[in-house]
Length: 477
Image 1: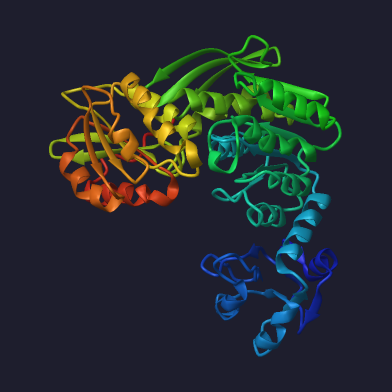
Image 2: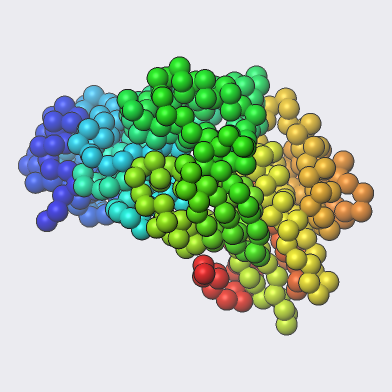
């Protein structure tokens, strides 16, 4: 059997104390009994809401080959027959295993952060680099203090590329994570007013994002949005971190990964770009100027990682937007269809503008309408009302016909919506549901966007269950 880690490697990496008859090795690493596979090691992490030790019995029932548990919990768990590795602190043990995974790996490692686009850029890199080698990348948005070490600990010793997403809500959170990852290439996609409630200014957010450069290995690269107003600040931070290879992506004249031309074609984009002097043609299986920007960063990083430019550029055509991040559905309504654009995963002013631009480019055939279904943008602190009101201008520019709003913060937009746009406001997503089902009609394009905890993903699922799919998602061409 092929093991991700032998038992001895686990002991050496964590300094843990074996309890019981240890297995030869484990096939994977898990912190969630709901997804744990037989033969994996279960790390009983104690989080803010749950303590993994409370699920030790469930882990054993699911077939865990090993439990990694805290010394203080051994008396309560000694009756469980499954082998254990006893450590002082389970999260620290996971971090130590992640560090060992990075040390043993010869993969080209890329780390991505930014106020918007980091998960999409990570998924683009996963997709295009899979055309030239084996890729290990984070599941979903595993980008925090447990998600990053977990992703590292799961990295096979023999993969060619490792792609890591690193997020933050407060200053100082990225530094310890990037010190674990030690990327050769660090990307900052965008600096925008996300989590502004925890920061005094956009410059503070930029400095927090720029922490990613502190972990780049000697001889590594920084890839920064050249169109971003914080380019100078971020490039200086990269320079101060000792990074000599600083690259820009975007439309800016001095960008080394430069957009030459962008044409939207319905649910995809055609892009001409220059990558470090070499021209390339991309067909991106997702629409929107923000997707183009993410693709420039991904292609640039892939090029710096040694991938063949033509191969990865061609591979971009097979990329499609992720669930909650721009995925499109054609749904039946009566004798016709309407389009649902699912942007329900997250929202901040920058990503809201990008989403509205996509909605504004949607064709209005057969009397169809552009419908924006918007929920609160969270973590904006004292700036929240002003930033929600400011969406009015974006709505007007996008040619939205109908605005369906929910959430306490969205009341500010409801009260300042542009003239000529029909507005319906409800306090919650649940209250908006019946109105949404009644309102949608053939020919419409419906954009759904809000911060995750507002619950708009459930509204998306309601539409998907209520209206049948007109076809499978269109394949990339």
